[in-house]
Amino acid sequence: MAPDMGMAGTTVETVRGLVYGPSGKRLDVHRPAGASGATPTVLLWHGIGPDERDVLEPLARATAAHGALVLVPDWRSDAPDGGRSHLLESLAFARKEAGGLGADGESLVLAGWSAGAGAALGVALRPEIADEWRPSAVVGLAGRYDLPARTTGTPPLDDLTAGRDPGVPVHLVHGTRDTIVDARYSRDLTEALRTPGRAVTLQEPETDHAGVIMTAYDPVADRCVPTTDEHAVGAGRMVAGVLATAGGSGSGV
Image: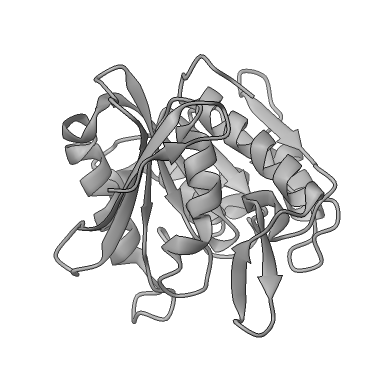
């Protein structure tokens, strides 16, 4: 366990490497020190790079500093099923174990970055894949929603066109400088979601694909790494506030 002071002034504890399901994959837990049953939960899925839970650690710890318990699992997009079983195993673990890890076990925000974003929204649109369960909210970061979701095999936009409803608030964040996944994909989803009775928000910070998760792409390592770049730190702080607020934490942005 590694404690330190989070960005919002709260001491954050990190527990790394918990096995979350039959596949043997692992996840990290980031939580406010002394987290009790009042703490909301965020399950945060990384993008298409296999087993990259570490990439989301800066954002996860910033979110935990706002008062949320954040679970970040590894999953593999190159698995035979595209990562579906890993994602759903991690969801089952979060639903079952969040209470024992210091959360309230009721408020669970499902969030994802890049390929993880569509996977998260897919669960809300097709709750039958999770025993008719839906999260309390979905947060999508720099995602594409016209491609098959890794959890359902169906593009979220197609599900919306067919009349399916996520049934929960959807919060989107997409960098205006994103050259990997253009921000228009989040704008298109926002328009598709904007009907009476639905709650949807879109924020577009001036950052890139890596910046929305408080990182920068390192071409030598071929992965996103922590950064002190002002645009990424600012965007990451904003996203942490979105994640914590969606989960019901009172500290906000």
